[in-house]
Length: 366
Image 1 (cartoon, rainbow, N blue to C red):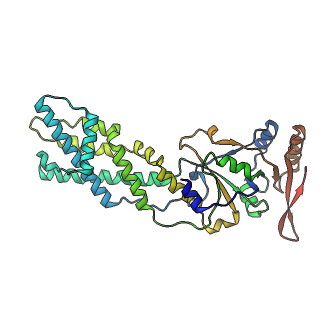
Image 2: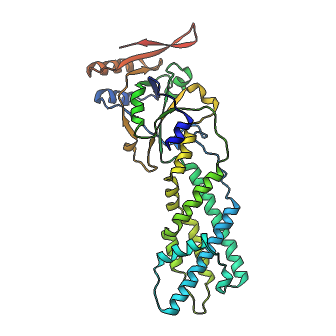
Image 3: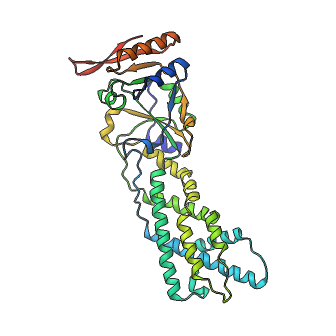
């Protein structure tokens, strides 16, 4: 993971860095009064830009993979059927978990069996394959969509900028009545040592098709984890040999349906895969050139997909507070009073439009 990050950017953190905030005077006053200043980590899925951290993946299932996985499952059913039939004849019991693992491994890496070898009529076998292929195809499509949207779900991001005098960002992020914090860049970098560091955005999106790379992760995870899915175990547990020794159509049809719902365990394992995180990190540091004016840096930290809100906050003390030029004077006075009453070392500034230069100036308030 570190190789991924440093191969993209090895820039030293800026000495000073800023973060804009939307108007919330009560929250700001609360932080001043308690001295508890925090930054919040967000999952990339929360960002306004729909293409932010998006990974170019074709969500339509790869037909070769669908065909192969359909064959693997068909073969696994046959191995289980043959083993159960042999066990019934010998009067012995088979550990189902061991049998599932054996059947899947043989089907992935060994000889693949077909339903006709289990005395199923050809028309029934063909119909089952079509049904199974449909379920597998839907399964992969659901996985593609779910995972392409969630590849960054274990990544926490906090966005900063080196530009405190951007009229665009003051208007967009702070509505000109909000505020911004100034931080010591080295302190933010120190926090980043517990995660994946702080890095500048590269304003050149990577649109290289990552479908193949993604499929490699997906397939290897399926090979590893499908045998352990509870749904799969329940499914084959019902795969008993009928009196005439034939795998029944009803059991196989129900098995195919269950497969279509057996996604959660695989998804969690894929999202936790280091290769998945590598993909997420690569794309979390790239944006289109339309955003280049933001001069953005990002702090990247581990953040579980199901992290509680209190787990998203990191304590970091600011050097200064900047106020938007349209903040009501009454609120400005409240902030100045709170800083004075708490004897805070934080400096206070307010940006002001300069009509002559058409830019923003800074006025020191405290």
